[in-house]
Each structure stands twice: as structure tokens, then as C-alpha cells.
Length: 216
Image (cartoon, rainbow, N blue to C red; front, side):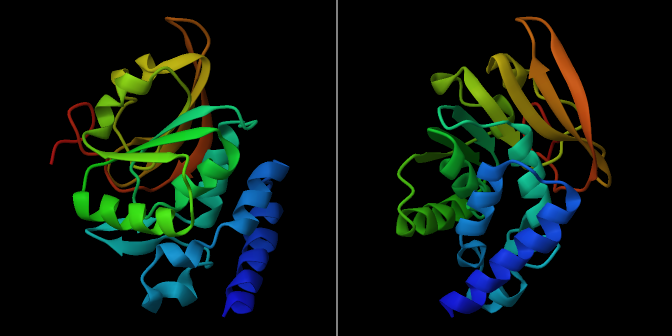
């Protein structure tokens, strides 16, 4: 079974990431390494390395592999960073980040989803990931400022709390738009008041629920 899923993982990288322009060798290595199927119910393992999102329960999904790679690459991680993830979900994106950054803080709104992700991450021995339950739109000020913030749900606008918790030089990657279509957008904090914005193309995520996002 290890060989079967390891082979599928390598093929995923070759056909879905490299052919679409993912270039960061550290991101590619992490995507080759992390066992994506283990973050899903066993019945869904055959779908784990396919080119689409997969449901994880509670109307949430594990993102398409390519989108995970694009968002991770956009943060330009070197290995020393402190990262905030909004939307722990399956825990897969946190595991990829943990391979590439020094410390990952992750916020999940749904306790059952967070508990399951924590169990899988513990089994895989990711000791540099801390998960809390809360409103991700407000960030996690206690550990700020962050070198990078990644938001795995869509918001109508970038939450001010998240922009404020970025270091100068830090990067926020977030889907921005309505509930049906969004633009994957990078905000680079150039000074205390100035942010440079860059588009990474169209995408579709579940809604970011919270005080500074969508209301339930």
C-alpha cells in the first residue's frame, strides 16, 4: 500500500504541479513527501492524489493539490518563518507548511475537524504545529507578527486583523471574492500602512466564516 500511494504522490507532482509551473524545489519536495491520503477517510484514499478537492466532512474539503502548492509557493518560505494558517481543515496544508517553516499556528472554527487533524498530525509527528479553535478572521494576535498567513477559505475582503498581524515584508495569501468565484490574492506588507497586491488567478473555496469574513 505504501508503494501504491507513494507512486500516486510522485505522479501527482509530475503531472499536476511541475507541468503547471510550480518551481520551488522545497515545495515540490514537501508535496512529494507528505502522505496526503492519510488526511482523508480511508474510503476516499483512491481520490487523494486526483486533481480536485476532496470532502472531509462538515461541508469542508481538502484543497486540490495544485492549489495547495500555489498558495504555499506564494509565501516564499526559506525555513525560518513563523506562519499562521486560517482553516486547519484536514491538516494537510499545515503539514506541508510544517515541512517548510519553523513554526505553524493554525486556527480551525469546527472542533471536530480540528480534533481529527490534530490526531493525524500527531501520528505523523509534526511537533511544530499548534492548533486552536476560534474565529480565524481575527487571527491569533498572541503569536504575531507572522512572516506569512495562509487562508484556506474565501472572504469578500482581506480581514484587517490578518493584515495587521503580518510583519513588514510578510505575505498573506487568501481567496477574495463572492461565495461562488474568487481570485487567489497575495498581499505583501511593504510598510506599516502599505500593501502590494498580486493576483494568482481564479479559484473556488468554501466561505470564511467569522466577524471579519462571511456571517453564518
